[in-house]
Image 1 (cartoon, rainbow, N blue to C red):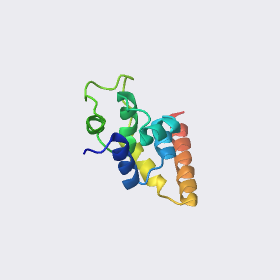
Image 2: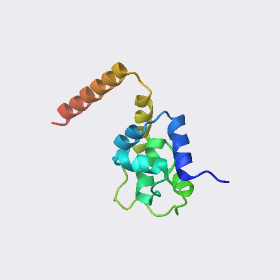
Image 3: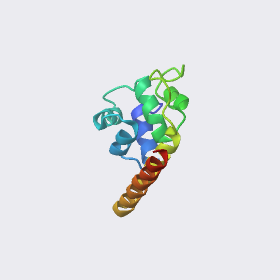
Image 4: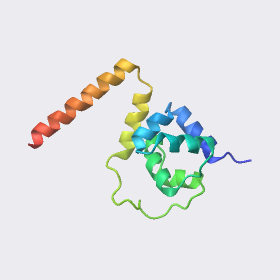
Length: 121
């Protein structure tokens, strides 16, 4: 018997050490949506899969197939998110860091953003 989408999602999250909250934050999807997917209470839509695939570091087309959906045209929300695969990797890495390390990473990101803002002015 083939595993369900929720079982595969749980496995992908487990191997990447990602919590439902981390997936939610990185994908801009409600944590309750991620939990419902994990529990098999809702079936994944194309839009949800497109939002969570980069966070899971899996090609969108592959996750669509796993979800039983047709891989098709580019995302309907217009242009794809810039650097979504790298952002997903960053979330994955940050999820395994200690609290102090996460604070340091946030400080670094804020300082980098401030530096970029200063250069662009």
